[in-house]
Image 1 (spheres, rainbow, N blue to C red):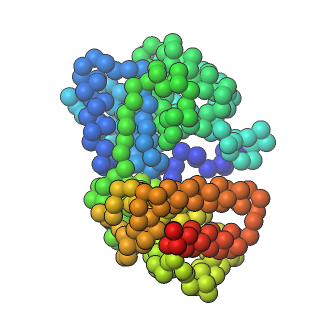
Image 2: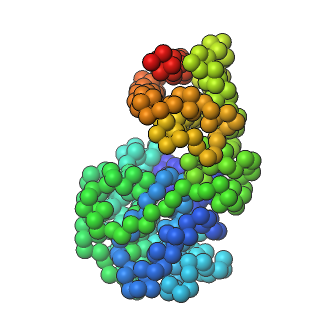
Length: 363
């Protein structure tokens, strides 16, 4: 049954990172790796950090293919499509590449929530079986954030005494959560959120049609995976509706708020509900930032900039909005954990935003 489980290292609606032809918007990270290789500083451990969906796994596979094919820095990271090492990697069958990821749970009927020590035993077997080949080996950990304590300690031992001719590539969305000893034994490659132009190009490469790339870049925080989710779920229209509803602050149209909550939390809204939670969180984050730094250059929807400044016209209001965002985020997590009615949860969040805005206006 475990063979039928989904691959936890892919993002819905996008090609798998090992199949992605080009990495867009991350030239600096690629150049940093090649410069280290050219200077004879090819570390055994690399930590690829940045927000989810910006290309960390794609870069990891590009580096792995480059090393397994025996290429040098001067060759760059691009390989021809017919390169035998690249073809094996894309097929998921390269004998000198191991991907450490979440495996099945004890029953084998679903994925484990963490990378467990059982998967580390497979890595040990890989090192033993691949040692006779003689070529360079690569390990991709996707994602290092998902390791439990036992797995993290086992990986630390490999980083402390790395096998010969082996490169470990750790993907991390939240590196601060990793063991400090793991971070200290890796060289860091930081990947940045994508600007609108490369984000639109990356979506086109993935076969995802998109409009208004600037708005998508704002809503997805520069993440290709996030942008694909928003584009495929009509998230721009949803965010525009949210902005429109809140544009009447310090008071909102109650019937309209109820209708929005029911549309996003009712039956058949299984995808819209978590997306709306994320969009509310994004709006409050952007409002708090606007209160400290001023009106943003790019908008996620028409009228958003004006709304953000209404919510947080100054630093004091920005702090209140930031605290509200944390409070609502915690309430949303609790509500989902205990199966609160989604419509009621969303309506309560909208009314809490209204109450906070009214309090700021009266202050």
